[in-house]
Image (cartoon, rainbow, N blue to C red; front, side, top):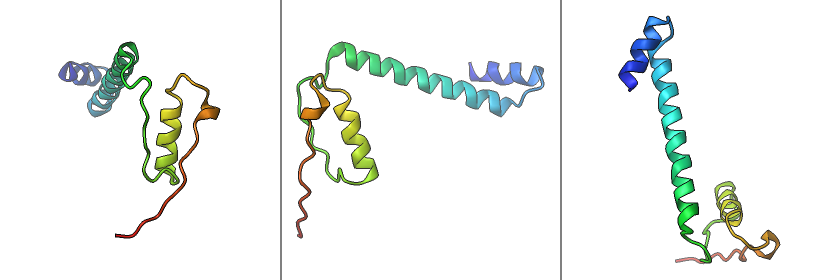
Length: 88
C-alpha cells in the first residue's frame, strides 16, 4: 500500500515521501481509533482505581485528567492525592 502511494504521488508530481508519511499518519490514527473503540466496547478498567505517581507535573496532570475523563462518575468526586516526598 505504501509503495502504491509513493508511485501514485510521483506520477502526480507530489513528493513520494510526503505521500508515504501522510498515509502512515492516517493508518496510525485509524489504528488508535480502533483500539480506543475496542477498549470502550469491552469496558476494560471500568470501576478500577489508578494511582498516578508524579501527578503534579505537566505529564502527570495530563495523565490524571485523561484517566478522570474516562470514568462514569462526576469528575468533582475525583481528588488528587497529597504529594508525599520520601528519601531512600
